[in-house]
Length: 260
Ligand SMILES: NC(=O)C1=CN([C@@H]2O[C@H](COP(=O)(O)OP(=O)(O)OC[C@H]3O[C@@H](n4cnc5c(N)ncnc54)[C@H](O)[C@@H]3O)[C@@H](O)[C@H]2O)C=CC1
Ligand SMILES: O=C1O[C@H](COP(=O)(O)O)[C@@H](O)[C@H](O)[C@H]1O
Image (cartoon, rainbow, N blue to C red; front, side, top):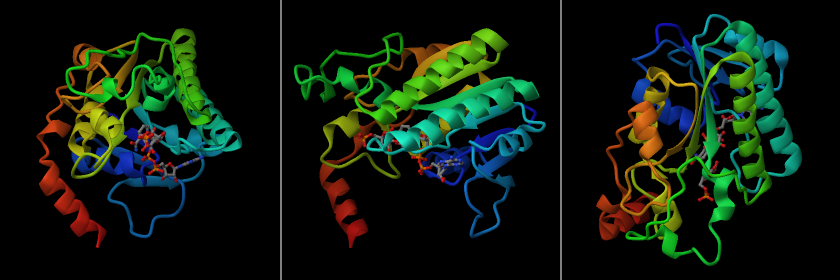
């Protein structure tokens, strides 16, 4: 990717993981929601993804978009996801096709398919040895309004790809935590995405050639119920981390130190 990459939600957790891994590999155009405390190392704009003028300005000259901005709370109320997640994503796609952007990477979520985690399947599906896998070909099955908004974002991508030809990759991100997997949380360990693997999968989304993809963004955890096959095949993603490699005792000790 020779042209700048627009990164929305750049001030958030996923944005930081992407920038920590890939800051020097691309020319970045950041979209921040509010003015930064410290001057960023990259070009940036401040604004809201629901504002047409802001997103049109942000798209100027970019070759690809990584769209992370939105309300990330699984408990987010409908008015918030309707505006920040659904309307904001539609505005982003409109501006992207208008500007002739080639690639659009969308931060989808495990919550787009959360209702596959039925009482009959859990907690066994979170455990090593269980062979239940979602692979991205299943219908969305959200368990909350936030998940509905992520499924809607994926469908918007389908429409903009089919109608306008823009390349679209939806990454159903698992559970991003810095440093170590979630503690005492089997589900979170099964869908852990380490910060370095988060950068790796986003690098792949910028480098690979594809039409329309839905992939799972998790590390190569021994416990998993999301298949990594499509991310490997379509993107060449090669995750390096695994929640099983963390010693629970050291892990808890670190956690207790961090919590003091
Ligand atoms: N952190 C995780 O484990 C996961 C995150 N995701 C998705 O990844 C994306 C980023 O999530 P995080 O970094 O965790 O959240 P975050 O809350 O740390 O970052 C989101 C950023 O988007 C900005 N933002 C929100 N609404 C906006 C708007 N209308 N216009 C412009 N900027 C706006 C916020 O100010 C914030 O800086 C979200 O779309 C979330 O749904 C999906 C699955 C898991
Ligand atoms: O989509 C998201 O998923 C992660 C993991 O979900 P959780 O139900 O295990 O908390 C969540 O932490 C993140 O905030 C959200 O955006």
